[in-house]
Image (cartoon, rainbow, N blue to C red; front, side, top):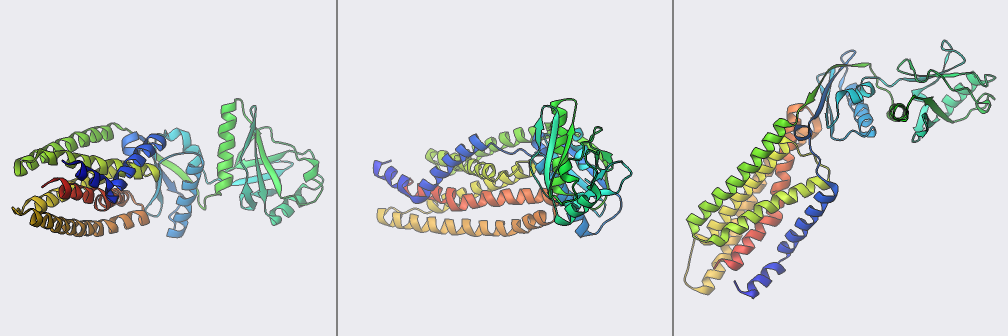
Length: 410
């Protein structure tokens, strides 16, 4: 290798782009981390049954509200999907079923009554227009919220002249606080007020935090259109995912070694082995960097897609190598010209093959994201990761490998 060749290689725009992407991926993975899916991290799977079969529109409302609740509650890697017209399945990584069964297993119906528990309902969840973040003082908590003008007028009519009477607040028919707050004189003067609050107290700070978060989440996301109940829940072990991951790593290393040996036997050039390994590792690293940035969950289907994209990449490298080294000539000028032509031919084959593969993966990705059912969702993860890996390969890593052959393999 001459210094001039090395300088020309590292001045190439795609080589510079590859180096930048590798550095960015390392930084992203080290700072943002990788989102592990239910298969790898373990977690819970909960089955909910609606009180009656519903149409598609109502089911969409149910899954949307549940998804908002869980995300707002801080649950990471949550998948909410419909199964038929009466079942909803929820997958959560790193969370036990007991932690959130109470939250997702309730419709979230909020009501407030003044004076006594048999009084007319003065306020409902549908009257709430916005909710502010809850506040905790010692073991007492408060959730401020605003209500609509119509709701404020109705509340003012029922509250007039009832200063210092208890305000009973219910969530799904259950009293929120056994010691209900008293109605302030400001809210009992008959004038409509749009700013209110839900208050309560618990025995410990942790209980107050949990109760405040549950009330805040339900008020923030709204109520479900139908009643639901938990009909099944179980914990998903991460052992299978760990075994699969370890097996995939070992299989990947063995595959790279086997391919390197075949390349050496075929072309008798040890220098080809290093760029093949670097190219494959670079593709994996960049795809994981992209997953880290967009918070894409790495589960078994995503790992399978990553393996498929790397396998396609190695196949493309063999095509490029064979095109460049398959035909020889003794004339130096002709050899350089033929090398460039062969590189172009090889890249054309690679791009055409990648285009076909992406076209085959797009329907799986689209249907999976649009429908979100269990099997189709798994295929969507496989398809999406495969597409990302193939795009990284044809845009960056495989042209860089071709440039390496063009400059250094004479």
